[in-house]
Image 1 (cartoon, rainbow, N blue to C red):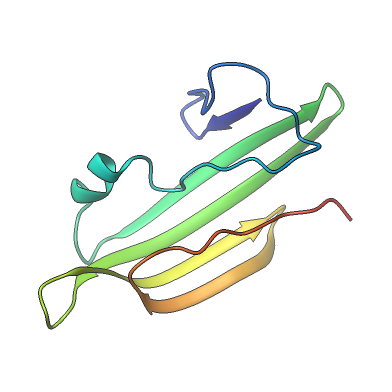
Image 2 (cartoon, rainbow, N blue to C red; image 1 turned 30 degrees about the horizontal axis):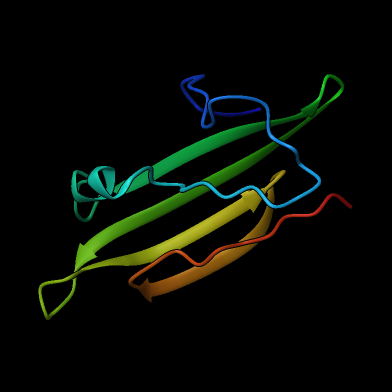
Length: 102
């Protein structure tokens, strides 16, 4: 299962982690339009791979309006089990990432 920082499940049931699991670090598109501009946003997801194995994905980003008036992520940092997995600046989307156990 995958839960957010508030303990809310991100899927309706168990997920097969043998394949890829896709979810948004900022929620739905409606959630994105409600995010505050120029304020840091931090999200944490807890992945329960099995009863004995738990991983975390931490994401932080800042949303701004660019010079054309469109929403843009000013900064994005994604950590997998406290290790930096992605860092980006001035992008209109957060790219998909694949995380693998070491």
